[in-house]
Image 1 (cartoon, rainbow, N blue to C red):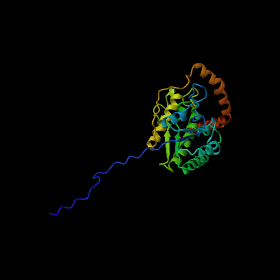
Image 2 (cartoon, rainbow, N blue to C red):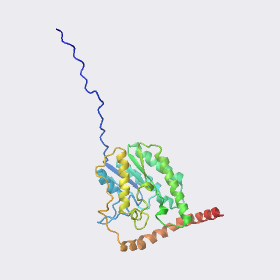
Image 3 (tube, helix red, strand yellow):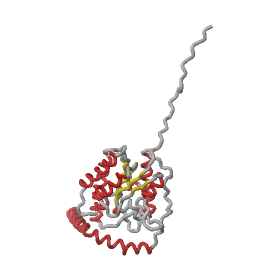
Image 4 (cartoon, helix red, strand yellow):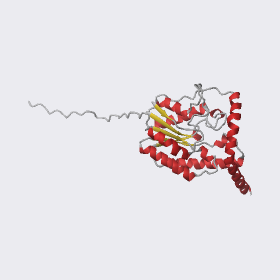
Length: 275
C-alpha cells in the first residue's frame, strides 16, 4: 500500500519577535559653556564633575571628550570645540550652549541658528546622535528687575526657537531635553549658590534626562543616574560668601558692559508699553 505523502514541514506558524540589540555609547562628547564644564557640581578632590561625567558612567562610555569652557558662546563652540569633538568620532554629542549669548548686547538669533545648524549637520554627517537643550525661564531662578526679566525671557524664547528649528530638520537623529519640563527644575536645591549653574542635584537631573533620551533612541543605559547626591563636595555658608566675593561681583562687573544697554532698551520698551 502506497504511503501517503508527508506534508511540508513548517518551521514556525507564528511570527518570532525580533530583538534589536541596544546601541552602545563608546565615545561621548559634550560641547558648550560652563554647565557642561561641570560648574556648580564641585568634586571632592577639587575642580568640577558635572552631568557629562554622570552620563558617561550611566552609559558605560569608555571615552568622554569635553572641551567645554566657562563663557563660551555659540560661535566659540563652532570654531574652537567642534573640531575637537569631530576628531573623537563620537557616538553621541551633547550641545549645551547659548545662555551666554542671551546676556550680550550683540544677541543675534539668526547667527545662532546658522552656527547651531552647521554644528549639528557636521555631527550628523558622521552618524553622531545629537542632543540639544531647551532652556528654562531663568528669570524664575535668578531675581531680576521686571523690565530686564521680560527682556531676558524674550531672548531665551528666541534661543529655544533656534533649538526647535534645528531639531525639526532631523527628529530621528536629534534629541531635545526641555529643562523647563524637568520635575523640580525650579526648586532652589536644583541650583548652585550663583543660581546660574545647576547644583549637584541639578546636574544629576540633567544627566538623568539626557540618559532617558538616549534610552528612547535605542542606546544602552546600564546604570541609570540616581538623584541622591553623593560624590560631590558639600557647599557651606563659607563657600557661598567666598563665591560672592571672588566670582559673583567680578562677573557682574564684566557683564554690566553688555547688560546696561539691554537694561536701558528694556526700560524704554517698558515705558512705551505702560504709556
